[in-house]
Length: 172
Image (cartoon, helix red, strand yellow):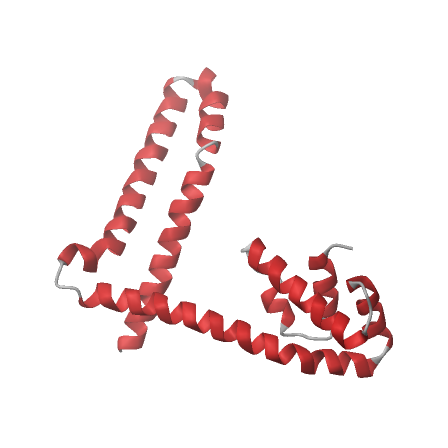
């Protein structure tokens, strides 16, 4: 059994654990899964994660002990997350009060640039398919190959919009 599967199994006994082992950052998820397995092994005295999970499933007292032991790690993870968010928020506040107009407006500028680029791309693709219908499969394949680039741009834009909206809400 892989570490993430074992950690997900442990999450049924430590509900807060699911938050940490279900994210997009696979290196962080793997690190948290390994930590959870180590805690479970310490609590049960078993030498493998699978054996520790089986022991915890069989004994409610071990499940309670795991919950108590995990609290220390959960708190440390929450503190680290809070530190990261505070750093991000501090950066955004500095941008918002900057005397440089571009620094204050880079997020909207980026949003408009992405929107304009997307509109131009879709217009060009539509025109090319209408003008050269025989080339449609090749054009669509080329468009699909731009997915990673659009994924990154739209991800950055999404974070910018959400964070900016939260900042505006917090000012009111």
